[in-house]
Structures are given as structure tokens and as C-alpha cells.
Length: 451
Image (tube, rainbow, N blue to C red; front, side, top):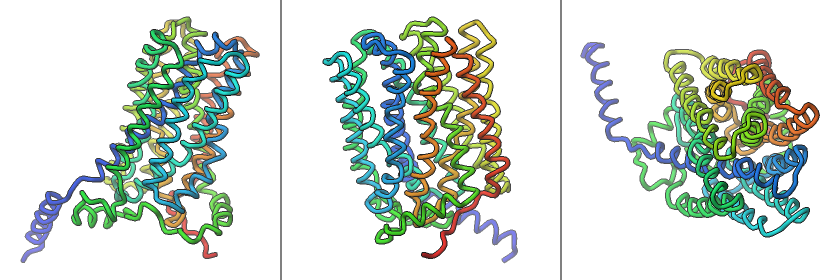
């Protein structure tokens, strides 16, 4: 048989094999997308309820900043323990428990409306801490699930898809939550979102499983993803080695590539938390919109962030298929997107509300393109410690959830405007570019030293 005939036969066999393969991995990433949408909608409830809540409870901008940051304090502190749980126990069950618990705490925030004064503030702060604590395992679990279910050449798109849900949450839920606040009061936002999450937790248990065990997946799909670099074992390889967690963390923190990725993620997440906390307040206080108008005005930037998030994954995987190195395929969208997101500073120099929303849309389109950090985590995490590595990455990133709302609160209170706050956000995007261009170097999977 000639070489050309052999190649043609091989192509036909590959096509036939592709036709026999199931596509369960796409159902799994759709579940990750839905879970992440609910996750971010529950984070954003506080920003939509914020203006009415502040008026009712008499909160200053600095006090608002601390309430906004409450979620992130516990979320950050629980990242490493959350990663440990994922390395130690079933990802499927840890995830379901997390969704059910954070949704229960979200629902309880609706009861804050029955209290007044300091009691209401303290109760709200405590419940936001509880939401942050119970959401902690989710993103490290997302990265672990993608690494288990997807070959390397599809991983960028899969990670970008679930990560883009943070913008889709705003597109879908912000107008709805603003309408609820306008018509029924701010506390009803929490009860409706809490009930939705509890229902989803039950659905998760029925649909999601490891690729080694999923009953709907055939061997052809399993062989395909394994040949492409999927890890198959969603629950990792480190059970029984938990005493090494401290030493593993020290090795991860000593790795220059990972440290650059972690600091870069902090800077990228500053943009996320501006949007999740202060953006609706900016539209109401600085631009004079009503809360209902602000809810709808936030849709365009969020939609552009969603489109950018999907596009970033498409570009990264396309570059891989065209022969670019993994390093180039990940860095090009990240750096380009962060440079584009600096357009947020331009809002200080325009007056028309339409131009402000347009510049915000451009900034969050860029942020979406550059939000490939979780793909990088799936590419670089040690095989035996994906939970700890993802938890450490998310610890750095979501520290921005503590610092950003508070820093912006002080900037706004001391200057009387949001101009300095937007510069602060834009400069963080520039630092993220520096991290990926100068500090990170080659992107590759880390091999831990033997203990």
C-alpha cells in the first residue's frame, strides 16, 4: 500500500472513530458553566442589593467596602483547605456539598431584612463570610475536572468556557436581580438565588462523575481524551499523602513560573471584583443612574466579557493547533486582553453614559480574552496535587476580593469620585502583563521533588 493510501485510510479510520465517540465531556463542561454562573451570581447579589441596602442600613462607602469584601476574606482563607479536601475526598461530592451550603447561606441573607442597625450589618457580614468559605473548593475543582476530562488541545476552550460564566451570570441575573430589588426589595434577591442553587446541587449529583466511572461515556471517548493528555482520574493521586501538603506548598511557592502566574492572577482578579462590587454603585453614584438602569447598563460589559472569555479560549486552542508552543498559545491572549482592558481608565475622560458603558464593555471584553488562568493551572499543576495548586492559585487571585473593594472605598471616600479607582484597576492590568511577559517564562507541568 502506498504512503498516500495509508494516510487516507488512517484519516478514514480516525473519522470513523470520532463518529463512534460519545461527547460526555461537553455535558460536563456545561455543568461547570452552570455551576460557575450560579457561583458568580451569588457573589454579585450584594452589589445589586448594595445601594438600597446601604440606604436602609446607613452604611458609608468605607463600611460598604468592608461588607463587599467579607466574602473574599473567608474565600481566600479557605482555598488551601478546600484544595486539600479535593485531593483527599471525592471531587463530585465535595462540589455538591459546596453548592448546597453556599446556596443555603445565600438564602439566609434574605432574613437580614428582619433586623436593623448593627445587628443587621454583623449578621450580613457573617453570612457573606460563610458564603465565601463554602464556595472555596469550586474553582480548583473546575480546573481538576477539566484536566481529567479534556485533552490538552481542548483544555483552553473548556477552561475559558466555564470561566466566562462569571460574565454570563451578570448578563442573565443582573437585570433579573435589579428587577427583584426594584419591585420586591433587596432581601428577596438572596432568597431566590439560594433556592436556585439548592436545586442545582441535586442535579449535579445525578449528572457528574469521573471519566473513569461515568456510565454514559464509551471507551472510544475515554481513549481519545487519555491519548490527548487528559488525566482521567478526577479525584487525583494524592490520597494517603496528605502529610506532605506543607512541603508541597513550599515547592509550589518556590517555583518562579507558578509565582508569576499567581501574582498575575491577583492583578487580573482586581478587574473582576471591581465589576462584582463597585460597578453598579459607580453607575448610580457617579453617573446618576437608578438601580434598575444600572442593572441593565451592566449587561453590555458583561456580555462583552462573556464573548471575550469564549474567544480567548478559541484563540489559545487555535494557536496550539497551528503549531505555536503552549507558552505562546496561553500568553498571547492573556497579555493582549490585559492591555485592552486598560481602556477602563478612559471612562474618566468621557461624559456621555453611552461612552462610559462602551469603554467598560471594551475593558471587560479584553479581561475576558485574558482570563485563561485556569487553563494555565490545568497545564501546570502537579498531577498528584491539583487541588492544592488550584487552591493556592485562587488564594492569590481572590486576595483581590479583599483589597479591591476596601481600596476603592477609601479612594472614593477620600477623593469624592471614582477617577482614582478606575486608574487603580487599569494599572493592575498592566502589572498582570509584566508578570506573564517577564516573570512566568515557559509554561509547563510542574514535577514535584520526591519527599
